Image (tube, rainbow, N blue to C red; front, side, top):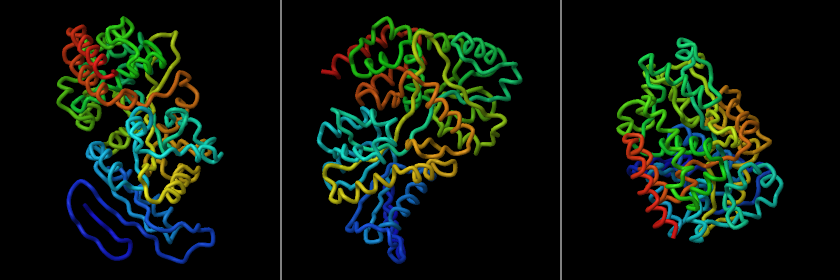
Length: 427
């Protein structure tokens, strides 16, 4: 744990959590409010760029409220997931990062998140954040605010496509025809690392939403559909077509998503179904924007509208927070059009602002993602499988997805196992 007091002291204590007390010196500006006391903020933005972005934003907020003593604790993302219930219950912070949709449901139902519907009654919040209001609504009330989201889609090697005479596909048949030519050239169509399971969840999301539509996908996530339903089976049969043709890299179950990046960088795989956070490491590894491009996951069933994964990161006020007035003011600040523009630009999070009044950074992938989510995704916006399904079902099903990618011939057994899990979990 690394602790810094704004002006004077630095002390290193230990590993997973980092506490940074940020205070901004200087005379009180005329427009500053009378907020005072302590404001404790817990973040799971432990990677360097998101962490620096959040700390800079908090520092700007602190400059407006010099009588407020702000203490920020940054916890490793995986550790945060296991610690959140404990810290929300005992010694809760005033503001905590988390995720929308079903990922917040357990804490809402346990009474651990504050109802912030009052903020949404303010046009500066309610109207500006309308695109994500639904993902933050449970029982007709809002339980947090979104500060960023990002597109998923297919990032691909444009130079490899050019070499093989391929163009961006828009239909399933075109996708498979491209893949056949890529495999024939001695490459895999897609890199993927399923060691931590969630990447396979992305493939399932897209294949199921494109096969059966957004409403069906959400009904499955909600436990309302049997895993042995023929429509679910068709999703897996579509997936099996790619697996059987050798579309994915070998031994993907041994790689994390980062460890799968070199296959694309080295040209051993032509594409990656991933979130926009993959762009920065691909660029850092030496791929230029002339080599790298993006397309929306293709249509499979022409009778269903196109839906997208656009995971939404959120701020919440714990029910046990001590300074809810300052916490609400921080949520207003973090979701303002100006702050959303700053934190989501390419030098910071490199993602998409949620506030409708914000500007989108002049980055080709952000521009493509913004256009896709704004105009070409009429079917709905999903939060990603491990956020839309309850945690226990998400874990069981993603284990099933990974097993299916390795043993596609055992589909019936895997679906029967998932159906047993559904019967147990959704009681």
